[in-house]
Image (cartoon, rainbow, N blue to C red; front, side, top):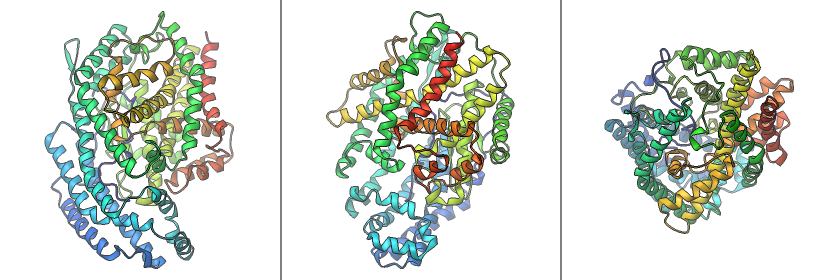
Length: 609
């Protein structure tokens, strides 16, 4: 119930996001004062004091007593817990966002670690809460929900908590694991700080990993090769650190999973995502079966466009020969996304506008800033914050559309309160991918020539392959990694081999793989922060493709139903959210519907040849 560390599940990073320098206009920066005015703010001190006292009082008032509470008293208990979550979430959001602005700053790292430790200590007495909830009889809860409509609103939260009932340990062990959590977080920090501190030499210029990865999309093939080989060199020199992080994190997970009797390494993620394992496997199987008609077919087209006998890994995200290399300034990017959002529904534009005008976006690249992009919802009585690393490429415009979609979703869901607003990862990508699709379709409609249409279609297909094919390949890599770690400590060479086993399968015969590419698993943050997170991207893309097909068919009242879906936050199961649109994710044909949209775009590209 109480999510203490800066939550990786809310850190909605895009593993393929690029970054940018401050040469694209007046790039916005965060104003974190809506959370706290500083790390010494009196409001922060007051919240820490209140939290310490309230956690102790909560335990004193309710520990050992939940089974005897009336429906009204149980509601008050839940609301007090929700308030504790809100205050602690505000503190950790401030500490985390401030840290991600400058991960190399020792004081910011220390401040975040200190806040994590304080809140962990304060909240240890609260571990009883979910344990006792899981001991309540079903009949008692059902009667309490029937008696009190305000309590019944929290039924989805109780259902998700009680899904962990078969995997619950003793009270003492649960408290021990809670306290031990800060130790596991240290491995995540080691990963973040190591990645942020890496330096790469590109033609005599010292760059961070974001600036270097950006060269993989450069029109100059020699520069792309230089960047790829430099990434391989630096990751190779540091691979033992990354191997140690992955070995330790995977082993810690294996131990906890074993004690909890989790049948697979993925089970915990499926439970937290409120999704059935068979639905995820249907998605995975549908995507893998579609590799030949999606990625294999597209990359063969791209190989011909680039005039190559065989593509190297540094050609995967190369711009097309006919692509306009002009960069997009920030004002144009903002207008492009805002126009697309407003054209769908003026309410969407109104919700997005404050992100640009009130300091809710941090867009520029700065030394030590965290790589990638994310939207963090903070707490429901403040507002979300979006982080980008903006470079002015068309893909950066799509990243803006993506993260802004998260932000709009989080604003709409905030009325559900702390315990019901947060969506499972599988649904968290809905508004972000839909926002991308709206922006893409608006740009496609404005294409003046077939060449412009071809460039836009190819760019969208590449993004969808990165979101669906690449992320399912990542998921397969993680499944293999965790399965292998259950059997043995893994050498860097072992992990490299697992990585390469999924790359050739997913990318196809158009590619050759340079020496050193086998270490490229090392810089993907999801594997460390949120194991098995990645399938949520493919889930979200497939879901949105199916949704967009309904919208394109002119479904009556679609906009209102869409807003109601976003407002629901985490209060409904995916089956309930999709039912008004006539969709069902448990139907294997559902995923084929989404994948066929990608395939049809490749059909159009082939027809242009």
